[in-house]
Length: 220
Picture 1 (spheres, rainbow, N blue to C red):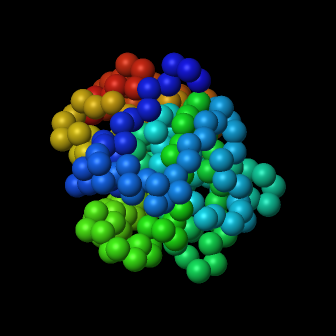
Picture 2 (spheres, rainbow, N blue to C red):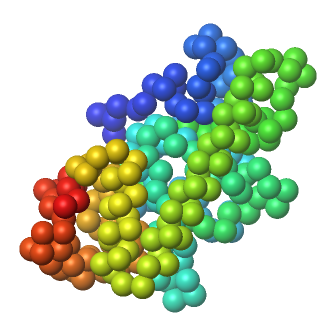
């Protein structure tokens, strides 16, 4: 993974408003460490005790749930700069109810969750800023999960696709936009198989409802 280009720490939303000098001190306080994962490698497995939150420095991480028969459902995806595992790490009983898997080769920064929740004895102003940022990001993650529920609630595959594309268009404030998921990941997110989803995409393209080139879509 020598060619990875991790996001600079100063651009990570969790550290927004904290200058570089204070950030170095803060990282030491949070017992930070970095790990690298290959595509498909499990980062956190369901029922694992989570002491640290993860921040994606490079690549993509999927939050997945396996049923009794081993069928996988993708619940959410995290890209560069985004947190994962925080919802479980801050609980009193901090066992994960899902698994987190590297959807691509990725690099992850881990921080001790307890040291984020409980400020140090010096009560540094930048530590308070960190806690404020974290709660804001947890709120944003809740919104993403609500969006996932909205997509999953649609009765047909076509409606699920259009619901997802509509959300992406609204976020980009335009009818032409790039989605962060490849075809396989998009099918997982829509709880569909790739072949059925691809057929539906091309059917909608033929009908003039959408247009697309790789990951760039246009709503008509």
